[in-house]
Image (tube, rainbow, N blue to C red; front, top):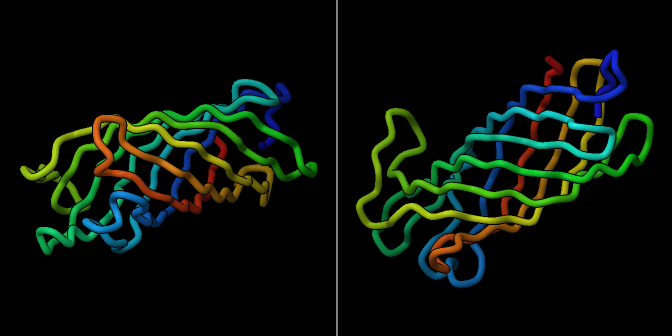
Length: 165
């Protein structure tokens, strides 16, 4: 958590990349594909709570159809912060997601006709380290899944640079 003039309520623009690994029921149908970008916004509501909104793609290779498949993912996460050192925090919490299956991880989006959209949940843990008074580095590990079906689920790692606003 970066210090603001008021002591907390810090806002950050987040930019980074991540990789998704399918697990459990999804492993037969999907395999891991190329890494993807991550863009988000973090608002630290107090010294111990933070909210993160993000938009990113989760990339897979669809073994059944023999082509790439990406989930355009919009997320909202709530995290409890544990101070590890004066410049490092442990984030623990969860995220709610909206998944839109698309054929390519790019804009304009081309929706997949083989899969339907889904709502997802995830358990998340991460570490944030302040590099300077305006720049931080974060690394998150999420275990996520869709709620409608068992089709989409996986483990995601995300590395992010944060710029204080």
